[in-house]
Image (tube, rainbow, N blue to C red; front, side):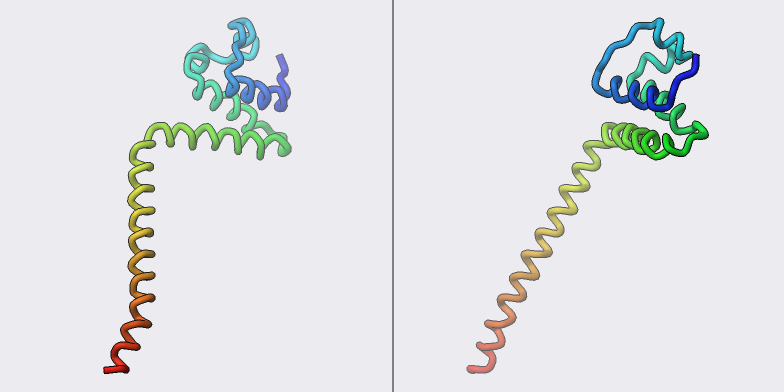
Length: 117
């Protein structure tokens, strides 16, 4: 069975949108059972097939979709750590900004006090 690259990409999109397909369909596509059990593994299998083709017009959309799945996997795996790091970075930037604003506003008033004494 010959499958077009557009069909593989669309199939991956349908799986991302939680469409259910019969086992006969997967058997015709020669997708092993181990890849069908986990959703992300199935998506990676479909997008990798699409990406590894020799057609250049399919490479970019399939690569972007594959990287999206890989990034989402990493986000789910390290979500808490990334949120804590993001919170710390934003907090440090906010404190730094407040300190710089405070120094800037007091620099002008301190200069006036020194000249009047």
